[in-house]
Length: 588
Ligand code: ARG
Image (tube, rainbow, N blue to C red; front, side, top):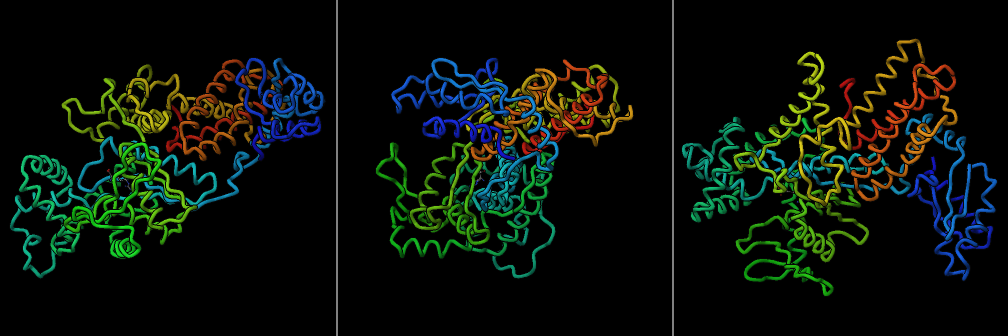
């Protein structure tokens, strides 16, 4: 179905034209004074200059042509020159009915679908998932779902960090702890054990220890650097250890993402791009882009209009090793080669902005991408504790994701059990579903680039702008529908008739926005727009629910229409929360 403002705009534009004005002045938006009207057109204000006329005279001309259109209940010219529009109730309910009858809620997919790769995981093997990776997962998963829903072909890639110093550190520390293992013996030619020589718990302990120790011990650090280079150059024993590290960590990482309802289409790793590096380096040298500077191989990426200093992109370090830039550049080559990516989106901490700026510039300059390939960086802000500082555990350590999830779920559980009896198991399972909504909505309802305060008490509240409030609205509808069916009602009747009162009209007006909100969220890659929308839709629904006795309504036609309307509200809310990456329980 056509977006509602587009439909209104079409009519208003043709009125501008027929009244002798440029039709482009006829743009329509949702009213910012809902007390006065539902939609508005401010085009007469801007047309006034071009036509040397008072704006209200232009508005009057246009309104005269719109007055009798059956689409509107009223169209008014208001001084100094606004056009205030209120739709006819029958027009509103017809549109809503059209949505209810369509499997896709009347949503029109993009006419210009793209092949998109979205890189939004970025966990590093051998390190536990912590809150730093939480935002990437939550925001990226939602953007991926939104872009898929709007008709694009989207591949979500976890892009594991498996090629950096952390692996060298673990190898070095393992050698200290278990020197007898065959992996360290360069003369060893036999097969290596299939079983990893450590558990995930050990790995999680080894890495922070080695990382801390290397900071005080330059020799140890140099050794780890060398082990990293040897690994990258293919030393057999190190490759075998590295494979063990990946296997053990990936199993753990997958469990964590599952709990978050986050699913990747691809489990690629930084190391997978290595095979593209030699040719890439050769090309950059041959074409004269790359040159030596202090022993390293670099590409200049600064531009005359830069306001701040943009350092050159380092392609090879002075010891010949590759680095984060090299891997990201080679990964671009891979994504274009394997998937014909037309757009690559990175959902990463905004503190990495400079890195991506360098990589994107270098990729363009050296022709790894062509002009119409979009490279998009979505940098997110930090999740802070209530003290406004980056989130830490009570003892100052890095907070593990599991701990955080447990904290939220426990709070929801307590809230559920407050004034009622429920089986422990059932309450726990509901708490996990509701807890995830609290966690994700708490994050997604903020603009991604902003820092936000992680506030368990607020996030788990069943009232206000929260995930649980939206779920509560869905559950309320489910319960109305259950009662309706138990009283012998049939859900198949979907005849939505004209709204009976203001609260019902408001629900319908919110439904009318659906198409537009989703498209806007996709264009801006902004899940928070969907959050804001479902909050407003839930509010409108709850006012309607409190103002009307749906189940005891005596007019059968009206009652059936209300049932059809709340079914539609539920479908829209459920579709939206699916795009945000969580779902609703049966009761709560
Ligand atoms: N592993 C990186 C980190 O933990 C994030 C990777 C983001 N994606 C990328 N293509 N660089 O910081």
